[in-house]
Length: 359
Image 1 (tube, one colour):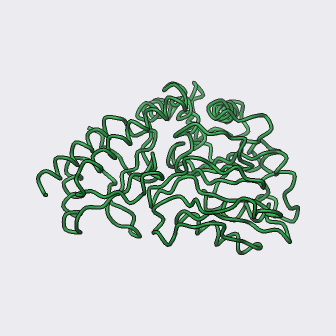
Image 2: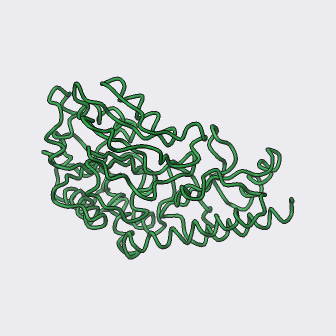
């Protein structure tokens, strides 16, 4: 029996994807080699690489006016690469702060130039997406940065700002979970280890005309243009991670695409939020109702003793990864695309049973 995997990342990968990768592991497409052994300059690998690019464009509706890049270093490297490339002198990078990852992105931007916090929900323990800000204050801004989903606090943007300056989003933990209008953004980036596959590859979707505004005095390997001009093959890419990404994207397409995935995700999250809301206060959601995440559901129990008991009994029943982040405590269920509906229904049932037995 496979565990009910609610880990926050690296996270669940669809079982059919794992089974196909297992089948092809030692002999990919009758090459007599694993994908991990193929030259990244070979035709066999090139087909995998380009297939991942094509599928991502199809699933997200990415126009030809954007580049799709496969990079390394995770979202953490993007925190530095973005200001290194796009934070020009005499310009300001604006941030809407909604959690720890926003804080890390801001910290790295400060190394390269002027920054400004446009809005923040830190005083409310990041329990909601900030809404008290004016976009009219963004004149001469280099870009506006947001984090679309906050794994630690369980909050998510429901509607993105229409920014008068380039809008950049860290979508590491909710890309492909719901439909988005890519053209609202100048750059989207996402580490793969939540909804796209295993860790090792980072997807960057960047508008071509925004790319043209990048600074020139940047090390070659850290220039987005370097990777755009070489189809992300300037240096050896994380070939196996990109292969796994292509399989995950095929799986998403087989599920009916992002539109149907969103419907499933809403059902999945609904099971667990209902268990919280109907618990008469036994479980309390960290996020306010208008900012609740489809991907990370955070909640607390009445006390630490009950929390420990809940987590132990959950583990005994093969519910894995439910402990909340150390900075928030409590519990967290990460319900990424690959987490099956039945796992969420089973967790909700367990939550109700536990509440009835321990009230």
